[in-house]
Length: 206
Image (cartoon, rainbow, N blue to C red; front, top):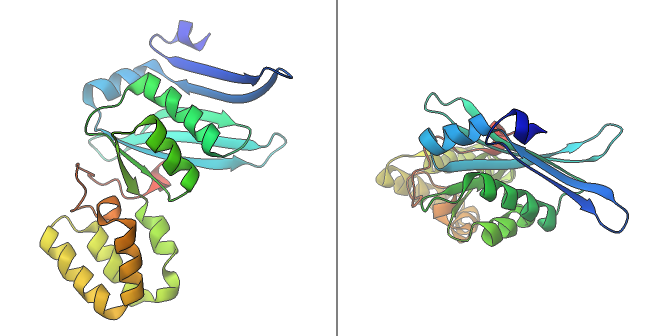
């Protein structure tokens, strides 16, 4: 019905064939698809949040930002659980609707289920981590360390990023080793191999 009333929309529904019960749903509206293909930046933020009402499950969301830094919704999905399989299904529908540009960057939190699904569906895409999630995970290191990491992560200039990392290495060697092992290209704006613009957090999605 949605595809008939709103041209170019993409919808999908998955049920359990054994008991004919609902498992997952997906929709992306035609105007959003056309706008993204014509004018969108090739950065997509994905996240999920739990349904806590009468009907439990997970809502999957994919968004980007327009040139005014406003949230631009791309797609919404609903699943019965959150795991690698449901994320893979959602991302496959997303790829079907929007394609996979060569310079695509997908930003998410560090959950393995999402990371593995991205590798499966978008093998050539770059994967950026949510800096806000990383900051929350290092609060115990102290405000000075957190601020040095934020300065390094948000820096547009390579030299500025390197200078802050040098100070961070002196202040907290273990934290420095940890974030470097994660991969600087995944969280540093200046070291990202494609343009990350202002996409530093998944909080734009939920």
